[in-house]
Length: 113
View 1 (tube, one colour):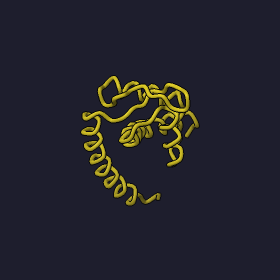
View 2 (cartoon, helix red, strand yellow; view 1 turned 180 degrees about the horizontal axis):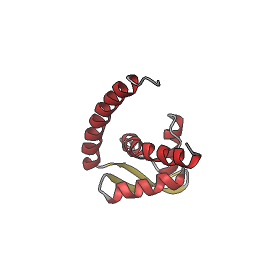
View 3 (cartoon, one colour; view 1 turned 60 degrees about the vertical axis):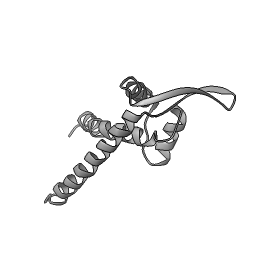
View 4 (cartoon, one colour; view 1 turned 135 degrees about the horizontal axis):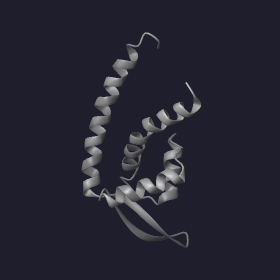
């Protein structure tokens, strides 16, 4: 399989997981860099070119609330889950657990594993 194809498939696999990771991490307020650092510290590297558009999209969908705060002498926009975002996170988390359970079974049964 070509490197381009692998990277494309890897990106598709990560896309939904990133949404869930960002929503879960925004149960507490973060600005972009602090969110990116938190995710990286937990083993999920995400580049700025992916994270910031994702945050903006989630905010436009009403899943995040934001406000400007002064921190370390700078104005930063902090994001946190809205009530709608909390509801969606609960639903997606449940779906993730179901999917993860099914995939564990499917991948565990593979003869090439």
